Image (tube, rainbow, N blue to C red; front, side):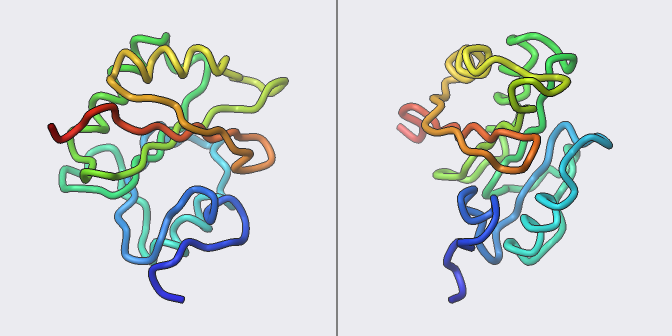
Length: 141
């Protein structure tokens, strides 16, 4: 049904629906290409890169331990918020425990709090990646 989230794979749980604009941050060769294709299929368009300057529905942030510290992630989250539609979703994808580049959930929580966000759920988005859903606190007042 058009406009409904997919129920298969990681994209259904990520809440990406047909017609949404998804902006991707932190893309590198280690990103899960299968998940990226599923997200593009669910949205019906290619992922936009970091330089995209229009309003987006979903911000997808790939984050690894060597990408920076908690403040660097908080700064990136703040940047992502500048073009995020009210009610839009932010997902931080980090390597799962035991994988190269693993980030502790507490570090993601701290960065989210610094950026005025709150982690609401965590899912296994792909075999090597966990996804942390972030929402804003009191945005739009």
